[in-house]
Image (cartoon, rainbow, N blue to C red; front, side):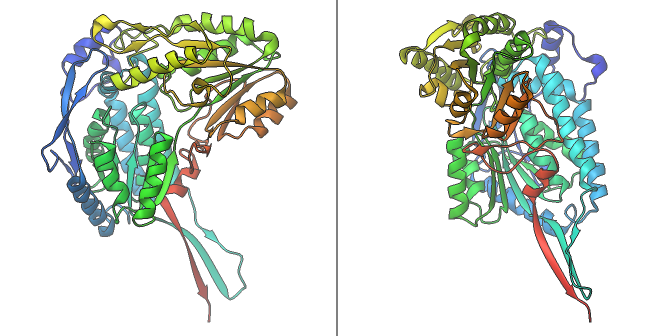
Length: 505
């Protein structure tokens, strides 16, 4: 399939299946302007969690491929073919790139759904548009970011400028493959860097496809490269490479820590990390609309099968309404039953792979063993399809020291914890190694602001969950990482500050 348009977007499962049957899957790496197999000729199977079928063989890149990509990226950077273009020229190319992604939206949504299991309705209406917005917004912003002049004596001029770092390696996760990639590659490319994108081996297909669209948009050879493969092979090679200037990552906290070690063992490359989360969603008895709060709490744990770093996995509810609110949650989750991902009506799709499904099922067992009460869901479903599906699970009577409340599960498992005062809620919410996101539901403006300010999290939402757009920075406190994606602050990650001082004669 070469191109699709919104006018031909299917409206039912049969239509999406017919379109899927026309797909061809590219599994090769993309280095220096062309697709190629790994130097070792090694491949791995890309399996669909929808039905267990093999979609493609994908290049399993390693050290040799990392070396080829870094050499190509460095050569392109030093040549100035991209790095020395006027920002407005880079902007024009990236806007074309965004337009091509939009034009191929049906194809890319299908790749995302078949590869990692998310519902096609979400892939088409959330993932594709968000990717387009990220690239387009960043491109539009880059020629509107200015340098500075220092406050100097009359005979001196102090100029403060930003310069591209050079070669950027971006390692992105499997849960939102295109969106997470766009948050990295858009500002890295916009500021003039050369980029090597390492997608997760669990969902590499859209990243590989994006490479061809980037070239079609006019991004020069060597400026954008894609290396599929495993973290312990090609990911490690990029992290240790002495000629990679910047490493950006979204994924687990344990891997994030290891990447910091690799940076220290090599060339002290800049490392920016967005790691795990165990986000508290705090509901006070005076929330303006409890039914809305319950509906959004359900979405916060079930959307994308709970495979979301900001998932509202800890639901803190004021004791006076806890029993009532748990009932509302269970009712709201009735619209989040797993279904076939190619059905546009499906809200809850397949878990990305067997290992992740096993992890979720094990945590459900652990929660019961720890003494929490499973009040809803938690059963595997639709096994006869060959797919990987599980009902969203709700645990009540959870304490914050239980593993289901303290460890990131990355699945649709909700832990309900009671509290009696705002101070107690804040203490429970902050009692975590993570600090990625949080939400507060209350009609009291003083409570809302006081609690929001006290929460140690990079994003705090008041009377809604998962808000913000490209204008707001995204990232975490504590072991949820450092640096920020999105907004103008993202440019800080991909540029070096230079002070140039002139003394006038």
